[in-house]
Image (cartoon, rainbow, N blue to C red; front, side, top):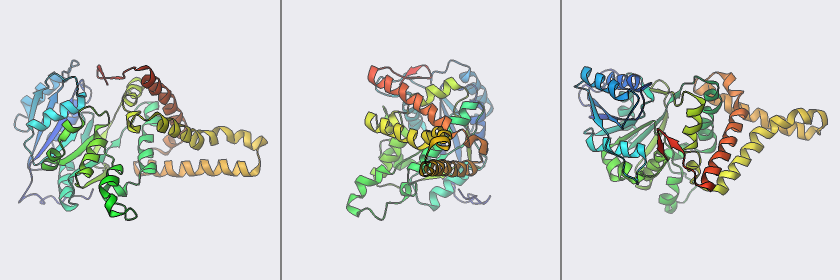
Length: 360
């Protein structure tokens, strides 16, 4: 997003409410909340929902609310109804309390740069959009974070023509717009900024109350209703560390991996095989081809490997990740293949994934 001049909002600044759902986020909640309180924007309020935390999150929020009583409000979450998933229920409760003209939903493991809200509000007005989603600058600690998490961005930027998230494809007949447009929808639930009216017009989080990938469904609802959205690189705006251990990483992706394929086992298995053929087979077969393969097969494998790393290194440079992370790409693909076996087992045997001590 473009920078915002310092005096840009001196005459008019729409009210913004930053909504943060928090459940057992003692390791990250203080950094997150302080970064939202410290926004260099003249008209914002921070609203945090403590969703039954048991790890010290509540004590941290109580201390922060005493220090920043004018800018921060902490509310206690109500018991989750059986037909809701936890995050959507928390966000729904926040939306009922939010008074701003613009609602920003941010995850508790994110933190913002001081002028993020100013950039978002200005961009929302200049681009005339009803929803902005930022893809945060992901920070990594453990080996498996470095190997796995970049593949989410790789998939987004190589499988989805992202320009069609914002504008309708010119090659598609206009009478198909309402049906086709929602197919080109993506969003990152770590940061969603809505115009309040548009958010309520689509039914808010209540419309996605039992969706695991509620962010994508909200984006589809926005486009289905004829509103406009846009996604932006979150560099110099918002950062995130999604998971801090290999166990968190496994359970975190386990809960939503299959949902991203609309629970379609044929599509899921087909995409898994495609990734094996595209990213793993050329690497594994290359040494053997050098010994026993034909020149054509050697060239084919080499081209596949080069193309894979050109794409991956481009994304690593764009997101300021160390290029050596990119060398782990086939290993990350293999990790997702193992996870795919797990989620298929969950699906066929009726096992429920868990997150934050709740079944998904």
